[in-house]
Length: 255
Image (cartoon, rainbow, N blue to C red):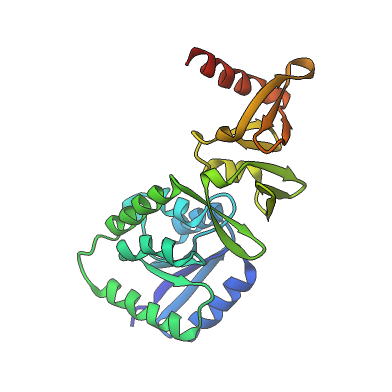
């Protein structure tokens, strides 16, 4: 029997340990490595050429969907997405006929997934890359409307219009939703890459604002600006981002 060379990718070590423990019960599986982030996952997929990857969807920086989008079609192994997404988001996986494990999962659920993986591996001529491309198209449609953030162990889906502004505080982000604040452990640069630039504007190294929530812009000291949001919050621009706010004002003047 040819064993399935398998790579485990998850940014949480306990999740990797649990998945490894369950997979080790399957004689047909040969675990060849692990990765704790998307960048390392890409390197390991290219270096090891696994047959199968269990890939966490929501990771800081390069997430699971970014990983598969970065691989050429002829380098794509079989993918099982590991996700804590809600049922609405899972429709994208189901429509695309992609295999996924919904957290939290147990040994029986993993065994069912492995049966599907083996059946898919044994089918000749199946275009795995087409399945992945279909998934990415569905998820991109969702991304146009919603953003997913991880807060207090939960994956929270937010519409663009819900977010007033985002503030970096130490290693955390404070996502301001009117009177509520979500604390998110993710670099601001990483979250910025996932935001729709037509809705959000980076105005400081530690602040992003929702364009539609800006009520007023006033001159500030030394060429900076203060942006006053609809809820009354005042966000001061940074020196590096003066030109960004300036272009915003020019664009509205010319409109």
